[in-house]
Image 1 (cartoon, rainbow, N blue to C red):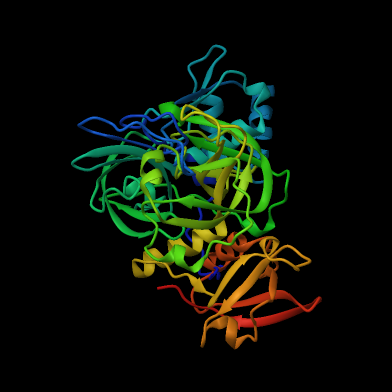
Image 2 (cartoon, helix red, strand yellow; image 1 turned 90 degrees about the vertical axis):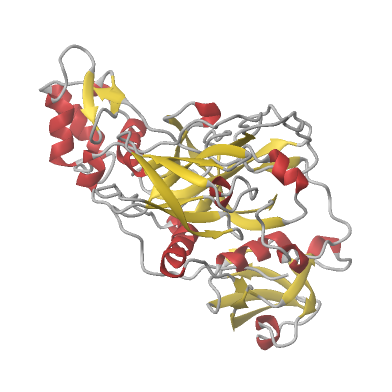
Length: 473
């Protein structure tokens, strides 16, 4: 098996706190038709719909939608309250003077004030500005950088969301959103910004290996880019806010915490690169998982797929449901920490099941690297280890969890670093490796030809090797 790791590249554009304050958030539109399944939803435009089955993992996309909210006008203690809310983001001036001016003096009087978060009629409603909490402040900051994406082909349609990367209209989303779960390579894309402006869009590039894609809005200008946080600095228990349109309910904000930082999941995907699965030979002795990992709304395509992708994700208990795919998972300062990609549902549950507090997002550091490579070259690269691996727990005689090296490819990175059959890899670039899926996900997360550090156990002794990854073709 081969695995990925990530190499930093120049950061995507960041928006200032003042910009965040001055504009409203983008959101995703409701699915054209909705399956009873997790986050991204697609449905046939015409013809009968085959009944979904529950035989394979399903990952859900998470679309987002525009939000209209209002904030109160007022003076005195209300001004203080709004400054305190701003302090929740960016140390007291997170929204900037223009935002606070609009918030405090832009309302029409009474108990409900209107805070404009962007051009047009898109607002955030704050009924009690004396008691604005962190989530409201985060939503005001992040919503202007989320758009709704509608995709349609001759036979199907669906919707998802995306995150604005640049003022001139580069947007990050999921591959399954723009390809309708791998069913269409030339879907027509229509994007709605937070102020209601509609754009046609074209695909810049897709990365099925990590289920990410970049699109470009035609004729766009003055959009608000999302600020990226460093996902390597997150802690379990950190605040998370997911923004999207679950079950077609646009502008939905849900909150939670980081539940796990180094989770790896394997998802059946019709858009998965052919042959990628062959690098991960099935090992005997494993146990069938009691969970499905769902790409919201993609159950049918996943059930028909014979390929899968293995990705490293953040786990959160913020509610993520069908319609949240491709949307933003942000931190307590409104910065992007992940792209919502999948949920877990009990294998025994029906297709009607929704969030059970097990949601997953692609970390911002991985998403940023891939997005930049797609914008620069039209495609993203991924590392190749040059070894087939299996869960060490399935190999008799092993004494530690990890990825058991079953075979080393001649001339590959693993051989060059001195790895041998029988070694058990326990860490990759400092991240704990518990099984073969963990290793593959981390190797794929890394850029091709990037340097990596591998920790492995041989004959009961721990060793470390430096290597240069190959390129996944």
